[in-house]
Length: 502
Image 1 (cartoon, rainbow, N blue to C red):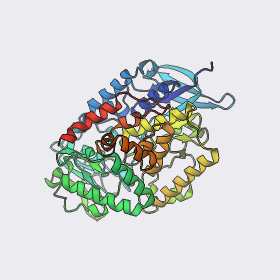
Image 2 (image 1 turned 180 degrees about the horizontal axis):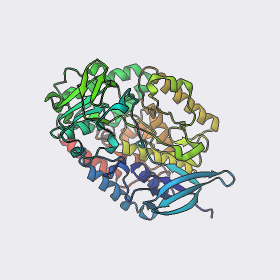
Image 3 (image 1 turned 135 degrees about the vertical axis):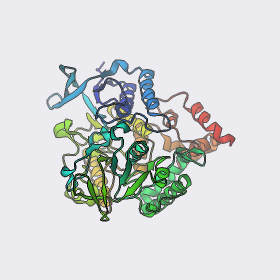
Image 4 (image 1 turned 90 degrees about the vertical axis):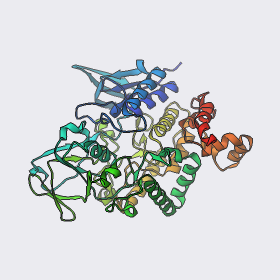
């Protein structure tokens, strides 16, 4: 009997954990490496400058609950023996003769090496803090930091703080500083939709369902202008429902759509702006003195600290010559909307073009879809390919798909900022559903099989199409491929029962 292929997974945050679990589930001999002493990635709060949540980041569940969930996930699926915590992968080398990957690892002061047949980078995109170049910044006399280094508001107590960027991290940083900092400014080049977590008394994400997602993703590919118009109308209405009093200097008509900038999710940002505790200002033109910042509209403000909430860049440098961002087209780099960010050349934003059967990268996929289920589906597809249950197309087709994806993104970048990992949702979900062997499209599509399923299971079909979206859906239908979960149906009905009683 042939030995099982060995797989190394670098990173054990949400991406790495779900990838490790799905690879093991397909009988691949996978091992995960995490430089921290605990699983969870950035969900594990840290005092140092390594990126993590804030100590009290407001989310539906608190940050500590997410961290505990990830630990429970690892325990439930018995991943402990396959995890190497406190072990940093410091070197990666591909042996062309054997086709294996040699990993150099460090645990404390001890270095070691190991070989694997396949390799997954699951370090995510929040790797390298990104900050724009600002004229005169080196002459600023106050405190400068990136949001990755901001952990507690006490570090900026009684200071006038300028937050650069209009993002979720900017909202979290600004609202935690209210009542502690002397004053809080947010500098932004573009406005943003700000969505409350609860709309009409219900969690915001309960307003989505499979049917709406299917229709919208189809429109996105067939009638993109109409899809954009519908998305803008939806986000504007949702913003106003949660925050009826829009600040006078916030223009929702020009706020970027999610393909260019994710909306801000916050219950407290707009009220703090309206109360005068947080002041919106335009983008920074330059720093003209030890405390003075000149804005694009000519106004000047004096601040004692600058916090960059301007995102991150993915770092694949550990992959060496197999770094998927090494080759960049002139059209992309010259497009204003690329914002100096690299575009990874990955088939379906997962597989290396150079070694698709042994090298993959998780974390480079973006479109309106819940993050945890997205990477469960992506890693299911990866596991099916690497276990021989689903075949990738020929090399020429892999390259053609990436070229077409990059051509489309470059056209978007010519019009404004765009997220490098953005994909056409309907195409990606259709591919991943087939590759993973979930067969959701077959059961809930508008083809003959979909109508047949509806005719035989009308009540269930309506729950799956119109109920609260749940990741259980992708573990429901038996196809002889990825593993199903016997409780998927009952759990889906259970979480939708309260809705049916309203």
